[in-house]
Image (tube, rainbow, N blue to C red):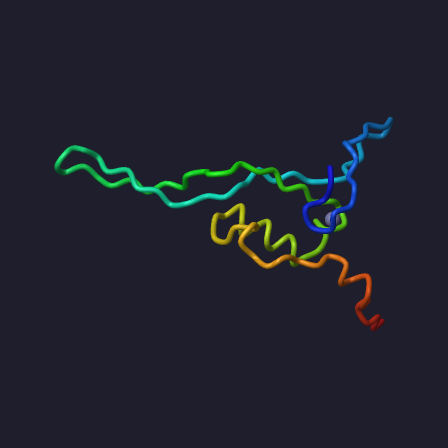
Length: 104
Ligand SMILES: [Zn+2]
């Protein structure tokens, strides 16, 4: 299994004597589209629902999950506002090339 964002190999959750160590987080998502279901009755309501087209599991390693930008994307996808699959790719390695300034 690889991280969806940075592609690093993630390990299964390992259990230790003190507890367990999580190496990745899993988001069940997929490509969705709005569908409409019209009640055949004359005064029936039209139901709107998100139809899941391609189920997909998004794996986020702990490093990417700590990235606020990636966390925001995951939240947006979870809320259904913006699909993480439709957004531009996040380069998680950016933080490695330009470390934030360290002001005491
Ligand atoms: Zn990652």
